[in-house]
Length: 147
Image 1: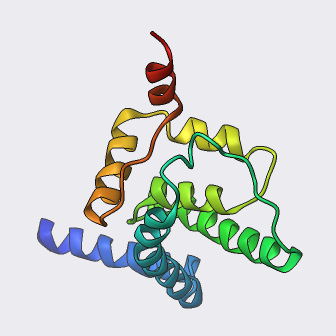
Image 2: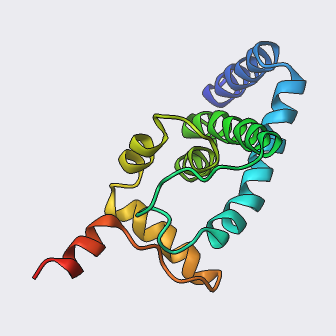
């Protein structure tokens, strides 16, 4: 057996083990969540107000709407965590999930996730391509207020 055949055999054995560890239903669900986040993330980022990251307060909403947003947010967070190790836009999906949920930890986690300049640049580039103005960040407001 040649080296190429050994690699092919090993690869197919790995695929077979992967399929037995992760049932088909799980993979289908993960694929659906990945596709859903690819479609909804740009739309959600576009509709957020420009000063969203400056005024991170929760807005009170009806009970049913809060629960629905929290469930969808948790699904996005779960999908984002999986996409950190699997193909997909993990950090962006995590951010969307955090923006949707209502939790005491929410504000700190969003600040931590968005402190990277390159991440902020990518989000703003996406918003500009969708025809929205870029987000304002707390540091930008401080710079304009300080002499």
